[in-house]
Length: 161
Image (cartoon, rainbow, N blue to C red; front, side, top):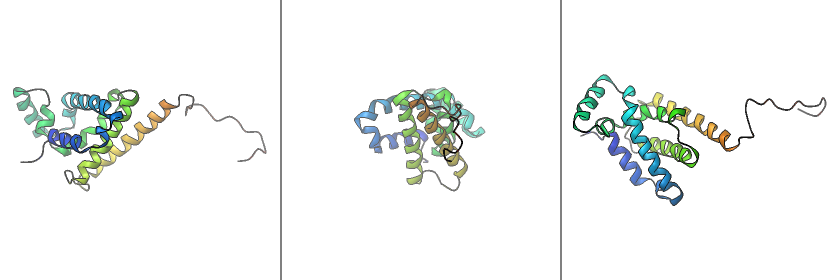
């Protein structure tokens, strides 16, 4: 029987030393609850028609966690860029934990051979781009005095490059 997204997430959480580290433990718990909510409410749009039919049937039994129970790691990877969308980003240290989780989870899925790097290359690249964008945004949030919209101060002629 193929591994479900829920089982993959559980296995990652169990194996992650970072998420057991005291500074990240509580934030990781909040990220996990947020990820579960995201998968239940938004991930369906990333699924195939067949997967959506399975989710609909599973929701008849138990709606909470239906998407993660009936889809596999590939569907999880396809949905993760949306979890990094600004509308789904947490705040402060929880946002940093969210980035840590997505990055770690995707790397773990690839290393464990649960997703094929070649077959999922477009989705993996999309996750990578989303992670870079969020990291940039978090960097700017951490330094509110630095803004890309503020032009550099004009230089005096002859003051160097």
